[in-house]
Image 1 (spheres, one colour):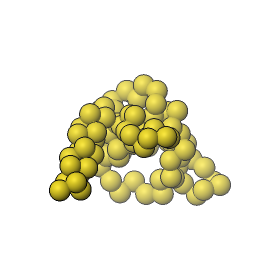
Image 2 (cartoon, rainbow, N blue to C red; image 1 turned 60 degrees about the horizontal axis):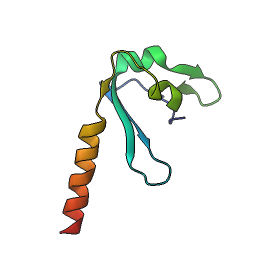
Image 3 (cartoon, rainbow, N blue to C red; image 1 turned 120 degrees about the horizontal axis):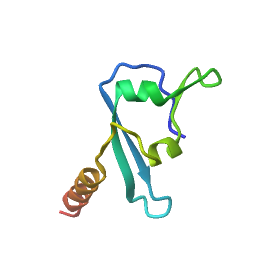
Image 4 (cartoon, rainbow, N blue to C red; image 1 turned 120 degrees about the vertical axis):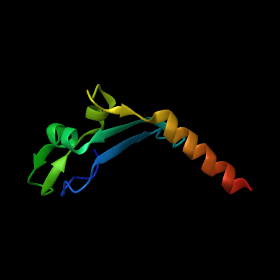
Length: 83
């Protein structure tokens, strides 16, 4: 489960799923604030709205897959760190 949303003061959110062993990026999607509002469930326990990893892992209509872009950025950072 991701951290709860307690504000809608953003334009889009990028949800990232990392491999639990290698920390490689397995999946990443950009979701508009309107779509986040539509799929999030209110939780009084955390005083916010929650989205689960399974929701993101599935088909989120309207989401933009940014997995490759983030992998490329991650690899570029690794190359900078090695110099």
